Image 1 (cartoon, rainbow, N blue to C red):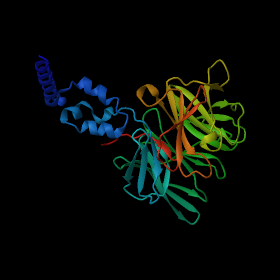
Image 2 (image 1 turned 30 degrees about the horizontal axis):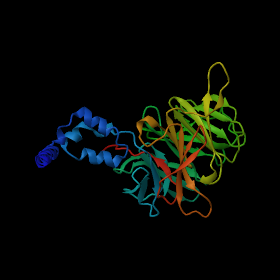
Image 3 (image 1 turned 60 degrees about the vertical axis):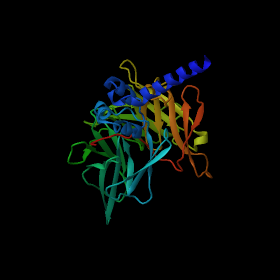
Image 4 (image 1 turned 180 degrees about the horizontal axis):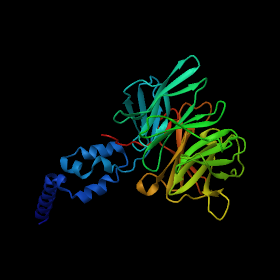
Amino acid sequence: MPSNISKKHTSFAATEVKKTIERDWSSLLPEVLNIIAKNLNEISDFVRFRAVCKAWRSSTPITDLPPQFPWILLLVSNKLNLECYSIPSNKFYTFHAPKSFTLLCGAAEGYVLTGIYNRSGDSITYQLSLLDPLNNHEIPLPDIYFDHYYPRFYPWKNQMGEYVVYCVDGYQNFKLDFWQFGQNNWCELNLDSVSIDGCRNIFYVKNMIFIVERWTGVTKAIDMFTGTLVYVIPPTEDYSTKELQFMVEASGDILRVTRSPGFISSARFDVYRLDADASCSPCWMKVTSIGDQALFIDNCGALTLRANDFARIKRNSIYFFGFIDNHSTKCEVKRMDIETGASEHLPCSIKKPGNWFTPNLHQI
């Protein structure tokens, strides 16, 4: 009797295995495939998923790429390659650029601002382009000329989904030149009516330019289309000229983040929200919660993501990286809880800091 029972169980198990092997996975409902694809926050997994069969590919178009966990963008020394590191997969990705570049000015949602400069006497010509490293698609910018000095370039993406690049001239008289997607020339923003007492930082948020004055800590918000002054915001509490400043939009709010100088082991962050209610003067309100948002901060800027879109991202957190001390040869990545100030190390294999970069699949 036990022998017969054993045979029946063996036969049943073999039948189940056969059914599993013969299952046609390409016949999964599009709704199911879409749910699976929306949880692929690593772009390489999304590409492999689409490559399984025609049914899976047709159910997950490129335009439905799920939100991506940011990569860390690194500059390879030969100036012909861009190298990115993915924390979730612990993998490096190297992309060969279509042409050599000597400038890497930052990233803006899927594109990297690269370029070269040529000096002739006192005149410097900059040839810039927005490059999508995943497919070498380039958006060339008009040439721009300066005398005697090297300006700072900042790439952003506006509310219309168009790319904006600002150039800051702080050598003698502070001025801003900007290029907007589709324009054939750079435009200078008329700031004759705005007094700037030294530029500490500059940010583009909600079609406004926010300038933090170096010595006073006062923030001046300027309409990017007219150059008129919109807000004059007093400095944050305990403002220090040594602190790093960041500004970003998060769920409709404008956040200002300050980071203490020094190495990652002693990094301290404070987060402020712009309170610009019509009934009171604009001011920075210190907060301990940004809700479902997570901030990713490097030495050049910041970006925000909704934690609910990712299994690996924790809400109300700041992700950042840097060296531990002067003797360190390895870069570390940490996550800090904004409410408690507690930090944890994340697994990482990079040797030097870079920029947070959100991969995309433009034009593929």
